[in-house]
Amino acid sequence: MSLSGLNGMDGGTSVTFGPEPAARTLPRSRSVTHVRPFTTVEAAIVAVEALDRDLRKFELAVADSLQDYLGVQMAQITDCALARGWEPLSFTQKDGFRLYRYEAMRGSSGRRRPR
Image (cartoon, rainbow, N blue to C red; front, side, top):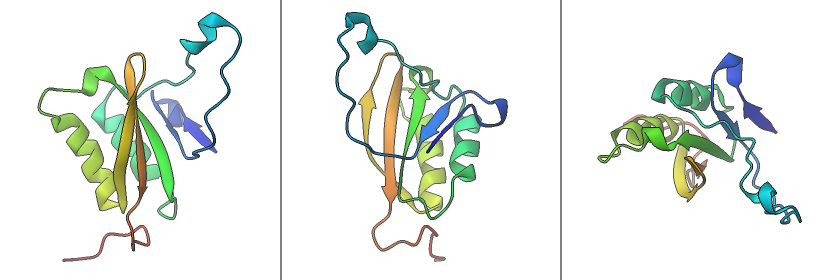
């Protein structure tokens, strides 16, 4: 299942971790992407909040323009994911964006426990 352009917003999320697609024979196909990364913190947060809490894994495409030197903007997005029970696993740098992977916290049912 893939979510992209949620309610007319930019950006996209992917909720599957299938095997890496086989390389195509066309040389230009490697640089072509159909992902529209999120370009605002607000849109990325809305997308994360819209995901089903029982989801075990998902990917979030975030534009390089949101990669500030202190990491404040990604911290806001990651804080939202953490609050909903998902932790960051890794990211892959793509052409113009990063593809972040999140997974449900171990021992978490998708909900953060009250302190």
